[in-house]
Image (cartoon, rainbow, N blue to C red; front, side):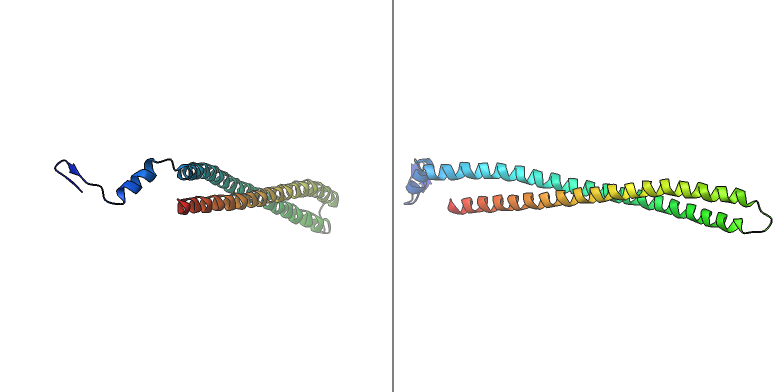
Amino acid sequence: MSGHGFHVHGPHDHAVEHAAHGGDSFSGRIAVTTAILATIGAMFGYQGGATQNDASLFKNNAAIKKTEASNQWNFYQAKSNKQNLAELAITLPGVDPEKYKAEVVRYKAEKEKIKKDAEKLEAESSNWDKKSDEALHLHHQWALATTAEQIAISLAAIVL
């Protein structure tokens, strides 16, 4: 107790002060180790967030390419409908069948290019999906590493 200039230490005060200012290098090493673990954990957390963002970005790119491919397939279907109408027109009386035969040939050629474009976009979408899955797998690895670091920090605190 302390009062009016007179100071008396309790029985445990000396032991606490000795532990705080003494030569206990074990506590110091645990503190430094905890700081290092926290720094490493922060880096793991950053990498985990970055790979999660990459996975989302790649999945978004896959969706965009899939939509573009769908648009091409819709365009392909429209050309198929026009081709079918031209083939039907060939059989109608009183029309110039050669005009519509040329239309059929033109639509077939246009459809081939559209089909190739659609298939290319689908392949790009699949590649983005694959990249997204790979990034998400890395994210899980970083998340596990971060969790292990947090457990190690908790254990170090318990040891202290």
